Structures are given as C-alpha cells and as structure tokens.
Length: 304
Image (cartoon, rainbow, N blue to C red; front, side, top):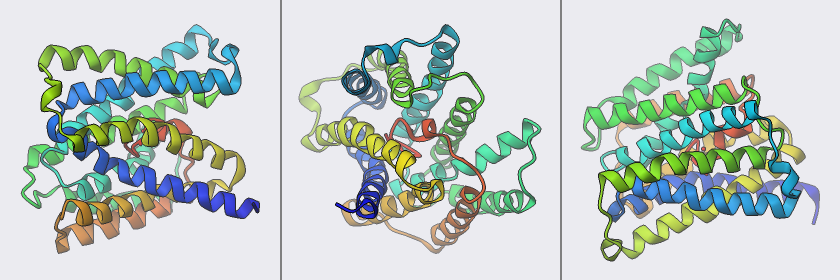
C-alpha cells in the first residue's frame, strides 16, 4: 500500500474516531453515572494501553524517573478530570456545541503561553481574540442548555488546555505510549473511587446504548485513535496531523445531528465558523503536544 494512502487512512481514522467520541460520551452517560463511567473507562483503557505498550516496546519502557512519573500523574489528573467534567456537562449540552467549545483548546494554550511570558506571533494572538468572540457566542444558552452547563464545558476546555500546556513544559516520560498509560491509570484511580462514593451504579439499569458507548470510548477512542495519531506524528507533516483540531468538531456536529437529531441555530453556526477558523489559524503556528489528545477526546475524549 502506498505511503500516502496509509497516511490518509490513519488521518481519516483520527478524524472519525476522535470526532465520534463526543457521541460516545453522550451515549455512555445516558444511563451510566458520569464519574463511574469515566473512572472505569480510564482504568480499563489504561490497563489495555499499558499491556499494548509492554507488548510493543518491552517492559523497560515503563521505567521512568520519579520526576517524570510525578509530571505524568499531574497531567493524568487534569486530562481525565476534564473528560469527567465533560461527561457531566453533556447531559445538558448538545454534543456538537460541546465539541466546538472543547475544540478551542489550542486558543487557551496560546493564552497560557502568553501568561508564561512566551511571545506568540501577533497574527496568532489576533486569531485567539476572534476565536474567543466565537466561543462567547457558543456559550450563550442554546438548544435548551443552561448557562451553568455551558460554563462547565468551558472549565473542561481550560483543564484540558492546562494539562496539554504542562505536558510540554514538565519532564515527561520519553515514550508517549508509556506517558499515556500512566496518565490514564492515574486519572482512573482518582475518578473511580469518587464515582463509587457519590453514586450507587446498578448494572441492570445500564442500557445497551450506554454499554456500547463505554466500550467504544475504551477501545476505539483510547487505543485505535491514539495509535493512529502517534503513527501519523512519525509519518506525516505536523501541519497535516494538526488538522484534527478543527475537523473533529465538524464530525461531532454531523453525528449529533444525524444520530441524536440535535438542532443547529445561526448563533451556533456563526460561533462555529469563528472558532474553527481561528483554531485553523493557530494550529498553523502552534505545535500541539501529543499528550493533548492522548486520552481520547478528543480534544475529548484527550478522544481518546
């Protein structure tokens, strides 16, 4: 198979899988308590990713320095935590709108870089300003979503951006699969006890749709999507790979409209155009760390 064909297959995999994780979150959260769902998801995905990493790279790859372990644990608290917040919010917010708000993560990363005394290009800063104007349009209560739920999605986006930003500044494990395994396991180990303490899940109440959504997030969102993403980082230009940042929300909006019959308004449309255009501008000049999407979400699910 020609190399170019392999690149497009992998890119299409990332587009479709990570774009669909928002739908997976919505389905899983229909009957499974959110914190329990996300906690078990990351424990299961972390164990599978660890087994895959050991099989692919050997057990020595998991030997990391204490500083690297601490950094991965911190990032693992923020990224799965952001996913847990999104699980809660998607009970009240359309998946398409949520994906657009989360899709603004690159804009928040630029803002964090600015606060850290970096000097992003003027065009990038201008794009961030316009992008946040689009974000303000999206956060306005739409489609029956209350303002508090929309603000929770913004909190999720900021947590995801913070974890992504720190992952590029802190000493992390050299192997991205090992780093992701630790992040998933730490996030799951923190969230699962909270989920068990705050809810009393009854497995008989879980619908087939929710169980399917949960398995989809664990397998496709976390393992297949991330493996395709890491392969792309080694085999395709970064500018091409980074296009997932503004294609995934489009996939999420389309699936939300087709599967969940979510409605679109002109406000959502204008906000979406502003956010996606500015994210496209930013990703031309900003490098998004692999860890930013390691957990599957997507800029979600990290989609994974």
